[in-house]
Length: 117
Image (tube, rainbow, N blue to C red; front, top):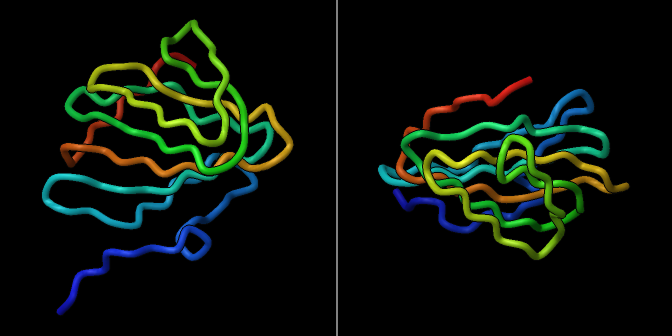
């Protein structure tokens, strides 16, 4: 059986009117890929992965990225954000359109450690 290797974002991404929505679309022995949709006004909680890197490829939208618990920097379409293992990351949509990004995490499985809130 042939493994799926090409994905259409419009077919993969899902959204939730109440909270940021993560939709996993693949996992191998070494990496996992998900699409996130953060609607205007929603937040993806600040967190870290103690055993995995998390790379975000921003496809749409703008907002705030949290590289540290008490630091904010602009986030926008076209950016690639690399959060090495143990690094804080999270986002808030301050724009008028959805933030959509692909997250690639490695190695898997990744732990999840929320920060604050």
